[in-house]
Image 1 (cartoon, rainbow, N blue to C red):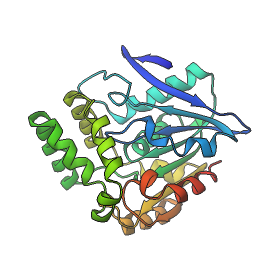
Image 2 (cartoon, rainbow, N blue to C red):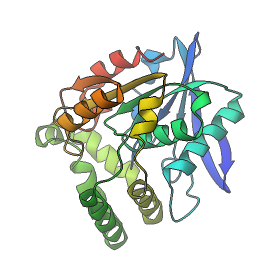
Image 3 (cartoon, rainbow, N blue to C red):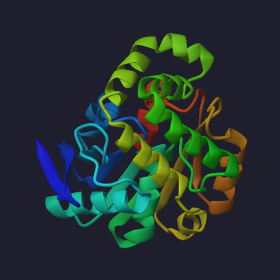
Image 4 (tube, rainbow, N blue to C red):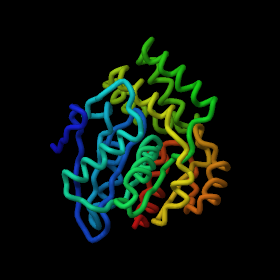
Length: 259
């Protein structure tokens, strides 16, 4: 087991593989943990070192406060790199993990070789999304289990809720191990994040964005248009918000292109 301390909290991470390519940091999304990458890491670890991190309050990592903002979580990533003695990395982040990756780009651009956003966006929350986050904070404190069942189910298309019913139940079980306080801290951190589209546009390293045509959270057409504006490579996936399950073969193939 590999751990560091961040603001007094234990942060868990795993290191796998080796090779000539730039080390790749994998960042999971909200209500997830580093286990989401288990089917992808073996396909990538023969050419590079892979570092997967449980973000604060998720998986085996502890919470450190009432708000887990994206900037703090980016500092967690930086601290893991310092622990490993790494000077340059690439990042692939799913959903909230992409937000953390963008804050890493904002804070530590010289450490970043390339960035991949998977079902994620550099834009901040809309007014509607902010209201949803605030309502979610209320719900998670009222009935955490009911909130998790609804929130995780809504990340999948109706068809894929049946197709991935076993995986969805596993996600719910893992997420239910999180405290209501940890869930609330992440929701608030996402709610207050800033728009980093300009930062991504001016980044001269490799930048890749993967969007799902059926994503119920992020509008596919808007994301595709944004990528033209910020000059990022855009890859279309055929399913929804959970590419590491719904489009794992295509996702893994594209991840081989990361510098």
